[in-house]
Length: 182
Image (cartoon, rainbow, N blue to C red; front, side, top):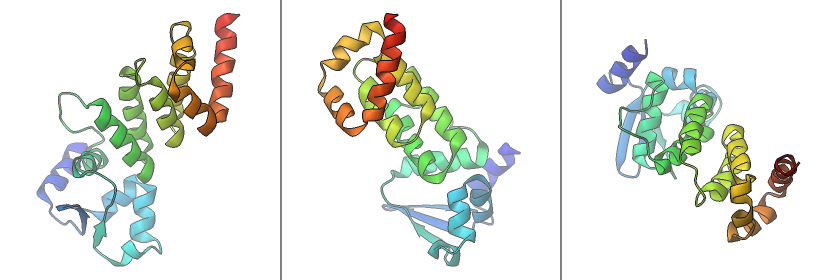
């Protein structure tokens, strides 16, 4: 079935909505989008302005991210690329969060977890909190609270930002640290 929907996206046959992102356009099918995303369902079949139009402007998203998200909506797979970069996974997670695509969000979180290192852990933790991604957040909390990372984490500028912006996360980290020490 996913292959058939993927073919439908590629052929553009029966498409009834056009998305504009910067200078690029994408066509899709309202029914398919609404079936997969509660946000698209509300836009196209609710009382929102988009329900009365067949053209939608998308702001603050790169065209390649929107294209990858559409591919996922139609096929339940990421686009056939060798690897999704850490940055692309972040952008896709933001898009998944924006459109209520929980499975895509989980896939992106898994990719991001695999790419966490000492340089990206704190910013990725803040990112996970901002985009309501508990799987990624838990992984980052465990990573930051580890014996190997804790001292350098607490000496970083990101630590101060995290404490002031997300104090509840600090509590979780301290709980993890207690378990590591005991």
